[in-house]
Length: 291
Ligand code: NAP
Image: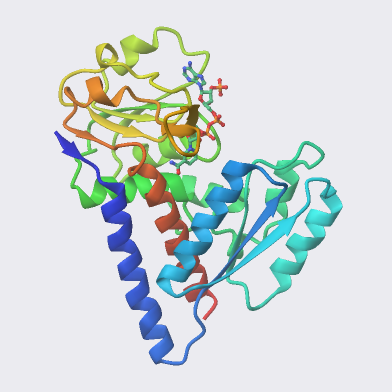
């Protein structure tokens, strides 16, 4: 069994990006600038945005965190997005989700200039991805592809089962695994909460990408020998024995499933760090496209 070590690979990617930024600095070029908008005080969202800002510093990017109160109106947020769209100094920006209930998330994501949409959530970019055109691929699926590519995980002709059909992970992942190319050329089954007999489906899978957010959902008896497991789930489970009072748990019963798997991502240290590395990669791409 091989661990798909997202922490290590994401560090390699950050070093590669840093080397490119150093070259930009040597040539007196502008370095990439990422902005992150966060609305409200959700603890997990603040942690994620904090990690993204630290990652920018690590590779030499400029970063800006835009904090807005929990009572921000939709129009105020749309005004801020327009300001970022127009700001020539910002190469790419993200709107940290979830947004408070008074704001229509879809309307907000549609307002982001597609050329600065480094999360790849705008329909224009999503459509390009689905048509195999060059674009910003959403960071989590992009990170999973990169991890599989760097470990040489064979995907051609394999049966990939994706659990979860969210717009940010499951749905794009299913499209990417089925497209022509590497990683890709898989036969894909996309499952969700209405899927019947899911064990029957997962137990036929060569590759399982689990993105549902239910701790320890995928058990050893649901998978076959030598399966490749990618665990996207991140759930905070209360745990009084830890300083923070919780621990991060994936969707997979790692202890038992890993005994049958050929490759498996740990949680934490698997897909999570890859997501941040690929957000940086998309931001570098955004800068290059604006040169
Ligand atoms: P989401 O929007 O919460 O959607 C969950 C999906 O799982 C839905 O499609 C839902 O089906 C499906 N589902 C729920 N219960 C199920 C069941 N019992 N059997 C089969 N499918 C079921 O998900 P998300 O935003 O993609 O997030 C999923 C998990 O990944 C969360 O833990 C999240 O924190 C984590 N995540 C991690 C990263 C990372 O960087 N590692 C990035 C993003 C998300 P329906 O469509 O029918 O409701």
